[in-house]
Length: 502
Image (cartoon, rainbow, N blue to C red):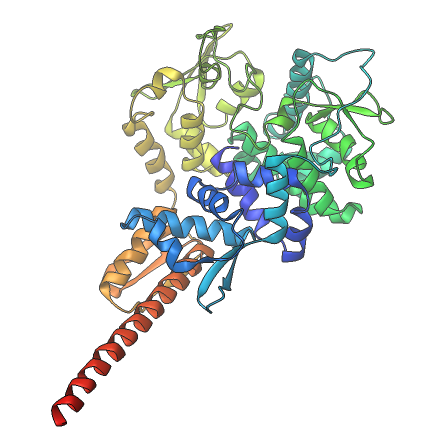
């Protein structure tokens, strides 16, 4: 999954109680999905190294695995932080009473089962034993998923642009879900897009899907659904194979209920509510993947490149349709009314051709977008994410003068920006302060540094807590080692003195 989607899912998971993780990790498909798509490389290495260890891993042994240097230490601390936040790794003691790490029993057991196979858990779906009388092609599944998902986006964009609507109408439940997530708000009976709605629109598709699914998870309890079953089924869908029909016989009542909602999202295809088979669409199979959710669709495809069967990376040419010049002119290679409507939120449209739209980013268009709740960072992120491959081949991707000017237009109407976070101060010495600041900056949580006061401001504290706990544990070990060395040296000096006295 993309970095944005992965972070969004991680933020949700770390809020869950420990008992929920214990239930989740009973399913091998969940353990494998989290291992493959939510852990950084070093965290995966640690898990694989400890997976078949009979005893806990000593903290000192782990430190010897990591190469000295600030970058390596930061990568280690980040890996440990994510593993502990996901309840995969726990602090314990070895048989000598020394600090050590241990994998979650449930996670380790399920991951071993997922890697080696066997068992009757059936957590990776049960393919239908009988062939479908009316087989469904992959092309049809892609078309269905694209039509259903774009209907949701049309509804959100239509809240800002009257008269824009999809050919497919979304269900009342999906509309209520968009209101619960505060993507749209009702004024009377008319839906109006919100700032969260703009943020939702400007994200890539994988991030959009996870954003909506997390809202679905949050309201699942009020729908008499088991959140563990909901989350487990979503991870299971990410491990299924596109174009294969799966049986509903092994699904729980909660997961049976989910099929109706997920079909409305375009994540699964089911002919009717009493059908005993369902097909995962590409939106489902890419839930825990880095592959495009809807290849060759109107949201990502360009009309200036083609993909050949011999292309080693066929998805590379499918992403990006915007060219931005230094004179603020914007050229979008698309004929999608949805994409054109999104562009009109922060640019002024000039000319429209069958497969090309010419527009310009102006002060008025940007400030109108800002007044509606769109931030300059969101505009820049959207332009970068959907930049044409021609722009992606250069560094930086967007012209720096245009990016700076977009941000300056926002600053003109703002004098102060409030940021929620935590102030860290009174560190023991300057060296420790520098290391902590560099670590926070590497994590991307540093917001402001007050060097003269010896303090700094961060937006998140969970990973910093792990960092300071590791620093404290390291100091404690160094202190104990110095005391042992002092006792050893002192004992030797005493023996020499006694021999001299004799």
